[in-house]
Image (tube, rainbow, N blue to C red):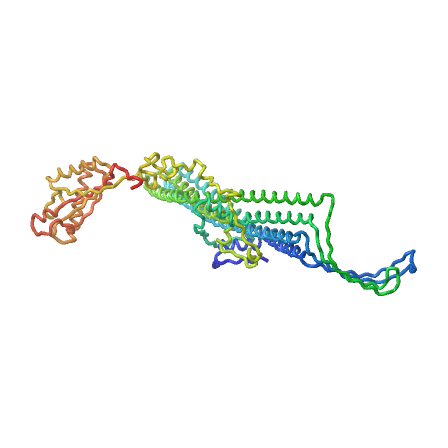
Length: 607
């Protein structure tokens, strides 16, 4: 019986570790491989018996009638004990032990490989159920939103406000949303049935989220190298070659003599001529046997053994190719889905904001019903795509780990009943992937990931193609320009305790507006200041009013976009003069403008 233990804590809710554990313990394929492994161990024991002597005993009683001699008819008993000890057999026994030992290791790695596959299937089944439950909830929420709009349109139609066409339209969309719920529920039934087949029991009502840390190597080449070192399927193929090589050595022994130590002791109560007597016989000696001719059988079996070595090598190459394909696809899926997730999430969040805004605008008559329904459908599809990608990423990581032979360890699953390589008396074989199966990066040979302007931003994500190669770019692939801040002190005068701009200050304000119009990419922050006269709280309010007055004038008189202008009042906290004189007070009653402008010169990459 297989007993799988989990090194992580088990909670009341079902976990993917529990699902994988149950699947491995109950899966017929795993159990079959386990018994195959046990049987292979007995083959090793049987081969080792060749080192030990054979002891045979024979006991009999016979009646004999003959037409010659003095005694023509007699009967009697006999017994014989014989012993044979192999001294030399051309290394056949040693080769057979090594052959079956490697076959045992083949069975061992096949067991591990099957357990990895079953664990992956359990992982996938668990994630499918978890994902489909969320998709059902998402479809139900989408239906509820449609019902909400339907009730609103129905009420308006009864009141004579909404058009009957709108009611028909929302009725059709409700039917589609209901169909989506039915479809997702049917899909949930199917994945639950598959879970039952893989795990052997129904999923729990509450299923924990699955989190796999970023345990994958940094590149597909490193991943492939680790896969060749750790894949049970690949090591099974390597051990199969070893077994075939030892089988050939065993066949070579047919061309060598065999030397045995033989001994026997016999007793019979009659003689060879039928006389009643007690006869004893003991023999011991060395027996050498050599075959000179057997019709070419030994040559044929040796050639067959060599062909089986070639067969095992081809199977190893095929296993290597399969592993390389599996790892390359699953690793690429992991990377691409990881890149897609932020984009899909941004689409989902943007769609959510749009549907909320459209619904609010619809309520006040600024959006059509079609706009609202389309925005709801887009949010549903965006959420569905994001959810599917999230779970696909998790499964892709698990596929990669299973291909590397490390999924069980990652999930914390171990078996106390499974021996280790050390316990089996074997050492892990060193693998050189460059000689058997080179780790080729397929993705580098594709044209789909081009970066035409060589700015390290892929063309699919580049908002500014063909940027100069000397420019430093942002995450969108657009050139970064230097940003300068310039402080302007505007000669704008205010009377004491006033936020009204003096007439003589308009010329200075007009010059500043001209500057802003000339450089439309600039933004400015207007700072209002007061003298020390008056209370602090009052000066803070007055300084803000003065800054707002300048902004209002720039917008109203000079058509400056108000989005480019920010204001802030500092009261008397930033006085230019601490003197308590009229001159100092007039100096402190001022407006300053901080202008942020992008220089026309881009930032260079090596800066």
